[in-house]
Image (cartoon, rainbow, N blue to C red; front, side, top):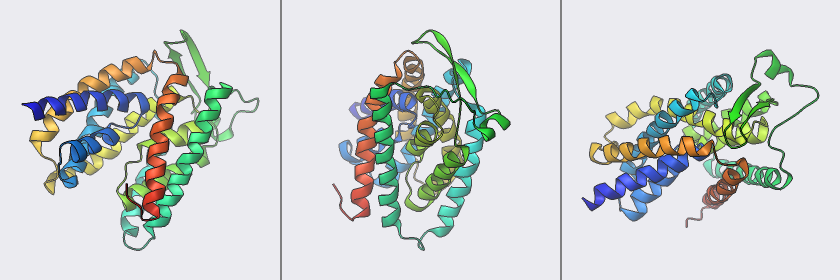
Length: 280
């Protein structure tokens, strides 16, 4: 009973934070299951996949209803992620994974710098005199109603090739290293494509669900998904993500970034240390 309650609570917290930050909840679920509950990493990864799907399902409904996420950007980046993931899977055992860990850890540190700059400078929305050609051609520029500011926010998207390149690399990293690419999805949109954080986070939630659903079948048939763990976790996550997706829209972007920066620092440090063969 205590185990069931712990998984429900962990699910609610993971779902809420995952939907606010666009990270899918897996980054919270895996440490809880392995460190606090002593679960085998194989089952923790299987539960993490279910966590991502549940977070995406719960949050995306609210984000679609309120028209916060950018469907066109999601479709563009998902193409790059999928191609990268297939390429990464094919390169397994050939490429030096230590170098990739260090490279992507460094990219995340760059994202930390950009986020801190936006916190102190306060430039959340791009207002370029000359809109990006590809963004205009493919109608990627959009708008959303910010419930915290109580006004419609029009924003521009730029550097589409840069965002695609990051997502291609993130897909390769996912296939090669077995890491989730949610944090890179937010980085591609927020850092490279200059999208505001709220549309970046909500769009990332949608994309992660699509990516996770594609790999969930493999985990199901190899026995990594245990119903006794996945079901209570998913129920908690559905509740948490529904709450988080609504709370996020009333939070100032600055507060979301302040929560995001420590997460980015933790993940980037872990990746760089792992690249050098150090485990903490």
